[in-house]
Image 1 (cartoon, rainbow, N blue to C red):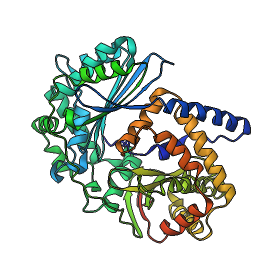
Image 2 (tube, helix red, strand yellow; image 1 turned 90 degrees about the vertical axis):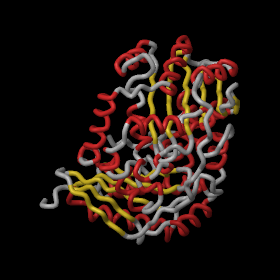
Image 3 (cartoon, helix red, strand yellow; image 1 turned 135 degrees about the vertical axis):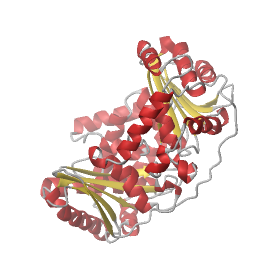
Length: 455
């Protein structure tokens, strides 16, 4: 099954929050941001007794604990080409029996203790996540350990999952956006680079075996390759003990190496069309932006917010939807990965309006490049980002997710303060200079999943 990977930075994902328009709401946002900054001052970097580095924050506002564990340099980009689909396959198959539990029994055990567990993989890493009530801490640790340490890979269940993924790889009509963003677009903009594909060919994916899954676990799911976040109603010592319980008997192993090189998206004028029987077309495109470790990261965030961030006053929504009526939905987000950052844009429209929508988005980009933005645009974008942070980080789970993503990009305990300060300090000239530097309406690759070619 094609998943929309959790690879967007928080600066992208918060843009999907609601637009806060009134002064009263903005005043509330200011106060809440102050509270969030106070909470962020509680974030600490610690090490468990096994030596696992993790970010920690105590929050007793709710009796819940949130744990996220990443195994670095273990995503699809770090596999040999014929087996690049292995991390995603593992993330789907890992709960097919764990220790003494069958798949059904393991799922029931999680449900019985009101725990939510999941696993996903992307181009860079594989990630395990679990949230549970503090009162069942020991049971949750034991079940997570079973998933990490003793997956049994029930043969019939694994085969069913593999067949399902193989089938979905050959039928993109049920999730056109997922295919466009995760397969078709990367194949164009990262050609001949390890980020080119998450799955590889259907033939190679179909040949992956349970032995491959077991070897992947041995090579990558080891203590020395792990980083974590533990947030919630838990003390420092309890958090250290929790991680040691989760990793009990997991081999120390050898830390994986970062074998992937930095790259830039290959951008040129191109339209690649895939046909499906549907009255609606999905258009996905890529553009340049600044890397996650660039001094211009926050300038790029402001520019993207104005261009296509999650607000109705963005250029995409205000012009293509509200003014011209060309799209049902649209936007743009920044994707930060270990070795590249880029913007991915989305337009959903009627089949008959694809050409006009593409022409219009190019005009918007050209106007931003030539004429830039106004000070009013800048201040509105700053306020909207702050409001989005308010919506996006109200709980310790939200904060855990934010700091976890930042940690994987090399940032630490000051990540939230750095974000707010960075946005506040952006100057109008910086945004307009960056627009002139990186925007190019004449070199944009478009992937179009459109209606039947005979329409």
